[in-house]
Image (cartoon, rainbow over all chains, first blue to last red; front, side, top):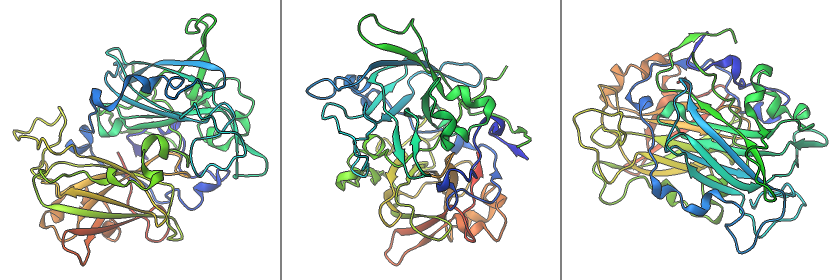
Amino acid sequence: MHSHLDLENQPGYQYPSYHSTAKRAPSRSLILMPHTLTERTGPVFGKTAVSPTDADLTRQRAGEPLGQRMIVEGRVRDDDGNPLANTLIEIWQTNAAGRYTHKLDDFCAPLDPNFSGHGRILTDKDGKYRFLTIKPGAYPWNNHRNAWRPAHIHFSLFGPSFVSRFMTQMYFSGDPMLELDPVFQSIPDKAKHRALANFDIGLTEEKFALGFRFDMVLRGPDATPEESHV
Amino acid sequence: MKLVPTAIQPIGPFFHFALTPGWESGDRSAGVMAGPNTLGEHITLRIRLLDRDAAPVTNGMLELWQADANGKYNHPADTQPKTADPNFHGFGRLATDDAGLSIFETVKPGQVEGQAPHINVTIFAPGLLRPVYTRLYFEGDPANASDQVLNLAPADRRPTLLARPAAEPGTWHFDIYLQGPCETVFFDV
């Protein structure tokens, strides 16, 4: 089948061990469509979309949140290797105890009044971004008995066009829960490493915060359909 | 050499505080894409997100992307000799509510390069390992018959791409079935 997507490096829709896919994953084949002007354009966000404190999740409230301070830095490029400047990145995560500031999150872990858990930034001219936050915790969910999501940070990016729209979860290299998590396991083996942040002593700030690197590659608007075997 | 894009992962159920701020306290104003000064025919889109059993998907998120009433995108790649409406951005984002419903106030898009008026809809939800993409067209629009993308869908499934007019003038219904006998046509974009 032909696809605009590199399906060998992306999860499929049907994944039975992630139970929510059962009634929601489309079962019919996608209809391959040419890119028109609608797909070659996309929402543009200016400087007004972010404020300076949005990228520092440790300074959004009156006090500092509890937890391990962590810098997450990386570069966003398209699949031709071009840096994607001025691209809106939105992130969200649990606090250090593994709880979201969401009214439907009923995990019996403490909320942290000093942690909102969300941030935004526009990439700079080189496609770079940098968040200061605290390390998220793992948390239980109802997918199966004793199911825990590995610690992760959600990332949402727009890129320059409709087709570059991107959403993922950034995990941590070496987390023992990754092999038990059906959401992470839905990623083909050879692509899993691209969803992992790696500890980086060069990004780590002495006597202040650990550094992790997470680079992302988004689809370009001109991707041509190629033969795929998945 | 092409770089391999990073793997996509699902949105999860707890995105509202980050992506649709205000939603948890009942603020639905993010669905207002067109203000009083926006040019064109003002319309209300009532979009429902449903699963295989036609049960509402209550923790999804919809994103709309469309041209203005003149068929111009507010984006540098749109080089058509038209002026973009300064009072229209073209992007809308809302979570689905307890009925699976999101209500957008916008304008009917104009024709772009011969295509029938349409709105691109991206759907995110827990259980969708990748977002799904569909298009909303307007039932009864004479340009539908010759629309290149609409006609890629098999004739028997093409109605899943058509919003239907409601009794109230200017209001349109659009049901998105993620799976099942009425499964909406989703595009590989």
